[in-house]
Length: 121
Image (cartoon, rainbow, N blue to C red; front, top):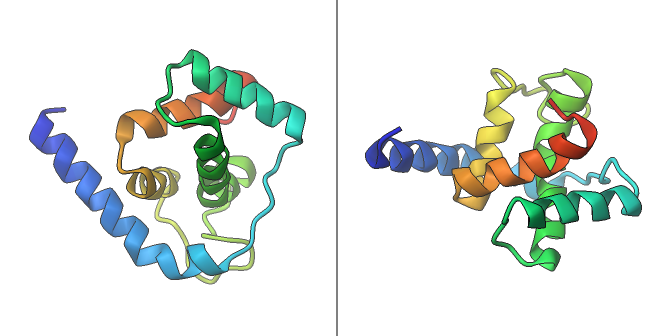
């Protein structure tokens, strides 16, 4: 991916996040793991050389789960439980997370911090 393609992709991801911002801010979501597992995810994120401090990681991983868990964990394309709107595919909630972070590289580190520990994909 060229630098221009990357910037265009991130711009589209930010637009996707902004299009969904209303329900994202309103919808409550409980992280689908216990605190011990969260610490394992944080350790993996550090090992992957993630750039966010741990307090920011916790906030961001909660958003990661909020946006992706129904699609990745349940295989449903509902945007949130009981939603009447749907993602087009499993890539779209991940792209929404990219838009939230503003970084494709960091989004992959969040995904891998979970997937390397619990097999998210």
